Image 1 (spheres, one colour):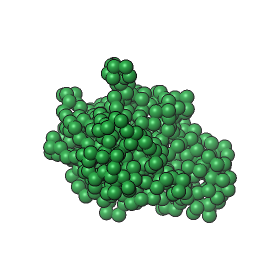
Image 2 (spheres, helix red, strand yellow; image 1 turned 45 degrees about the horizontal axis):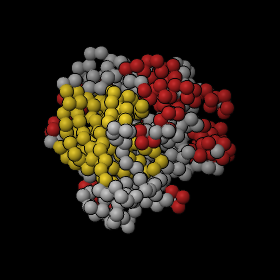
Image 3 (tube, helix red, strand yellow; image 1 turned 90 degrees about the vertical axis):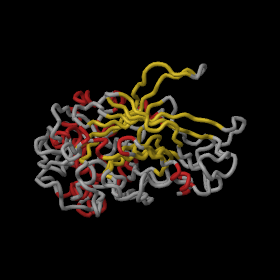
Image 4 (cartoon, one colour; image 1 turned 30 degrees about the vertical axis):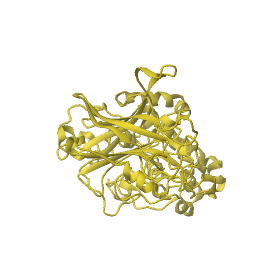
Length: 466
C-alpha cells in the first residue's frame, strides 16, 4: 500500500461530492478545542501550564539539526495588560526525547523561569518605549535556566537567558522583531544549540465553528481561522541530530519520539519557597489525542500519565469514537475495528512490521540499536528524511514524507490530515470522499520566519478587530 492518496482538496471540494460526505469534516473534530488548547477540565483552569502544541522537524536551513517548538498558554488576546503573559514560575517546562523506544525519556530539556521587576511601585509592564531586553523601561523581565537531563545527570546549558517580553504594542515596543531576535541564545554543549523563549503568533490554524450546529448546519460557516489574532508563549530549541539520536548516531538510529510536559512544584505564598517533587499536570505529543481520542472522564488522567503507561488507553485508539458518530449520523461506513492503522499513527510509529500501513517511516523499531519497544503516544520524527524542497501541507498523505505524522512542521494542516486518518485514509479501499475532507482553513494567517525560531511574531491588533 502507498501512503499517498490522490485527493488533495478541502471541505468545499468534499461538499461538491455530497453534503453528507462533507459534513464528516465538520463532525470529526467536534470534541477538540484547537489541538491541545484547553483540552482537559483541570488544565483549562490553569492556562499558563497548558501545553498547546508541539512541533518537531529537521531544520530546513540547517539540515544537520532538529528544531522543536513547544507552546504554552492558549488564546492570548494581545491586549491582556497590565500583566500580559509571563511564563509560569515554580514549573518545569520539559521537552522529552525517547530514542530507544522504551516510552521513557532518555533526554529531557527543561526550562525553569524567574521573574524580576525593576519598579514594584507601578502597575505598568513597561514605563516607556522598550528598545532592548535590558532597557530600564522594561519593568517585568523574565529569565530562564535550560538544563539537559539524562540518566548520567544534569548539564546546565544556559543559566540566565532572557525571555522576549509580551508584545505590549508598537508605541511601547517600536521594534519588537529586534527584541524577539535578541532572545535567541546560543550555547556550546554537544556541538552547539540555540534556544528561544518568548511570545509568538499561535501557529495552529483551523475553523472552530464546528460548535454552531456543525458549521451552521449547512456548511455555511467554514474557512475562518478562529485562532487568527491570538498569541502563545513559545519555546524553541535547535540541536544537532547527534544530540538526539540513540548512541549519537542518527544514521544507524534515525527515529526519535518527542513529547512535552508541564510539571508544577508546590509553592508556599507566605515564605516564597517551593517544596515537594514536580507533579505532571499537562502532556502533549501527537496533536488532538487528548481532545478527540481520550474521553472526557479520563482526560485529566491522561495529562498526568507517563507514556510507558499508555497501554491503559489502547481501546480508545483501536475502537475510536469519532468514526462511530460519523457512521451513526451520516451513514458513512466506519473503518473496520480494531484500528491497527491508528495504532501505528499514534502509538508505534509507521513501519512495515508495525501494522497494516506498509511503509518504513518513523517508528523507533527502525533504529538498529533498539532492544525493547513499548508502544506509547509520542510525536515521532525520522531524522534521516531531509526537509522537503516543496512542502505539502498534508505531509505524508500529500506525498511529503518530511511532514506530519513524521514529526510536525508549523505549516502542516493537522486538522485535515487527522480527520482523513480517522476515516481510514491510510487504508486501501477507503471511500474517495475521505481524500477530500478538511475545514477549508489551509494555512496560517501569518507567514512563518524562514530562520530559527521560525514562529511568526506575535499579534498586537485586538482579536475583536481582526
